[in-house]
Amino acid sequence: MSKLGNVIVTKGGAGGGVRKRINLIEGANITLTVADDPASDEVDVTIAAGAAGGTIVVRKDSGADVGTQPRLNFIEGANITLTVADDGGDSEVDITIASAASGESWVDQFFPAPAPSSHYGTYASVELTDAIDTQTYQTFIIPDDITTITTAVVMVISEGTGDLYWQCDTKGAACGEDYETNTDSIGATATGVTADEIECIDISDAFTGFAGGDVCGLQFIRLGSNANDTIGADIHYLGVLIQGSI
Image (cartoon, rainbow, N blue to C red; front, side, top):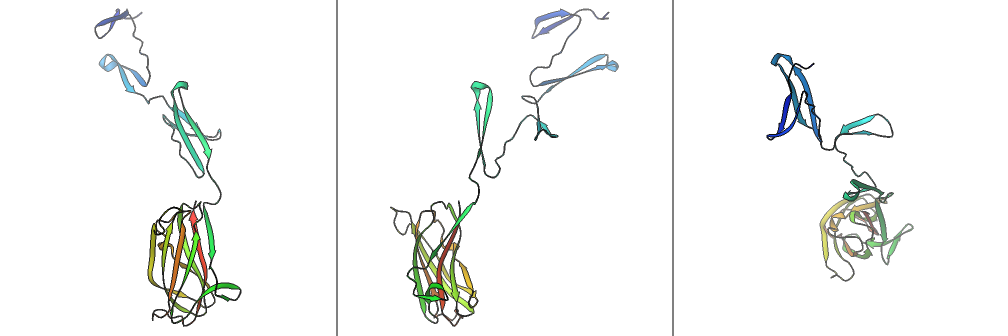
């Protein structure tokens, strides 16, 4: 038998009921903690906001619990794309997981020297003579699927060991554009070479702003008359290698 009389419950002054007991019910996103406090001759009711939507227990492959949180965060991994859309009609969030392109993430293309004037062993080449300034011109199209040029190198074979003193100029444009839409260059530079080795001379800095599908014109100059060119022998220009990400 309760020691108390009836309790009148009101909300905002309006009568809610007259009973001997009050039943506190947790609503959405609310947690209640009820504790008897004899020292204060009262019952303590703690009301706290709960996590919106409750919590979700997450497992991987029916294994151990990974975590318990009110929200899931989907992150795209390698070769995966996610499309997330709120579907109010079905009271759900739709998550579409698709496979992106896989395999090689880059391509390379070698463009041999045009109209070779000589050869070195079995390698067709353009000969850049010692002690004078000589040059070669080359035209090629960057592969369409390249989005960013990561590396561009000129390949040569030298008949001697020393410093090759060189410079290069580039122009590039897509069909329908002015032929000088993109222009770049690398100033006079000394690069050490070794006799009879295939040397890859990095000219990547001469392709700023170039893209897949561009028609490119490359001028490579050996500054053989300059004292900084110390090879003392001819070199053989083989061509240019373009590498890029897709």
